[in-house]
Image 1 (tube, helix red, strand yellow):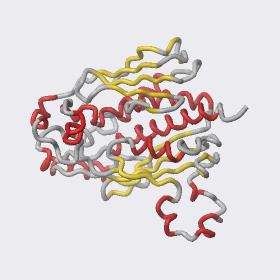
Image 2 (image 1 turned 30 degrees about the vertical axis):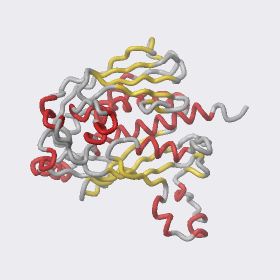
Image 3 (image 1 turned 180 degrees about the vertical axis):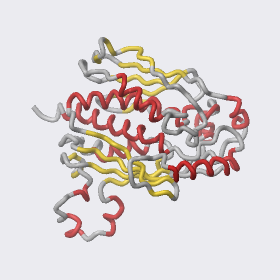
Length: 325
C-alpha cells in the first residue's frame, strides 16, 4: 500500500500540500447506496477549520480558511455510487511569504530538515505535505466513513473529548473554556505552545472487528492515530497502568473495561476507550522566527481523531463481511 493511501477495504488516498492549490482525498471501496450527508461533512470540516467558530479570537490558529468541499465524483442524487469518491478543498489563506526563511533555515521540532534529507526537493511553504493542513483530507474521508457506519450500525458513536490542554484539566465537553482561551492567548503572545491529552470513546461498536494477526483492531487503531502529526502516544483500556497490575486482579474485574473493549485483537462489542497524548506544537516564536504560530492543536485535532477511528471501523466492518459464510 503506498504511503499516502490507507485501508484494506475502505481505501483512502490523501493528496495536496499546505500552500498548494488544494487538499483532497479519493475514497475507494465505499458501497453504493449510502446516504451522503453534506451537512455532516461541513460540520466536521468546520470543527477542524482554522479560524473556526469555536475559536472566535483565533488563539488556536491565525490561518483562516473557508474549507468548502467540492464533490468531484462518486455521489449522485445524495447517495454514494460505489465508485471512487473524490473530494477537494481549495487553499486560500496561504501567505507563503511568511515561510521564505524556512527554505534555508529549517524550524526546530518540525519535519523541514528530515523531509529535505529524505526527498531533497521539497515544498517548504507551510510545511508542505507534513503540515497539519493535510488532516483536512482525513476529515473528509472520515466523514464518508461515518456516513457508512450510520447506515450499517447506527448505534455506534465515536467521540473525542479533550482531557487536558497544557496545565489545564478539563471536566466537561467544552474545550475553549475561559481558562483555556486565557492560557492560549498568553502562549501566543509569549511564543509558547502546549500539548495535552484526549479521550476517544467508541460506544456500542460492532463485535468481531479485527483481523489477526497483523491487522488486529488495536493495531490498526494505533496505526491510524499515531499517524496524526503531534500524537506522541496512545493507551487502550487500562493502558500503561496494566504494567503494574497483578494478573489475577487485572483479569478478574467484572466490568472488563481494563481491556478497552478489545481482546485477542478483536472487538467484544463493549465500549472502547483510547487515551491519546499530544506533544506541544513545534512552532514557537523564539525558535522558529518565521511562519505562523499555533500554540495548541488539540481543539482542532478532535475531529481528526474521530475521522481516523471512523475510517478504521468502516474498513474493519467491510472486512468482517468476508470472515465466514
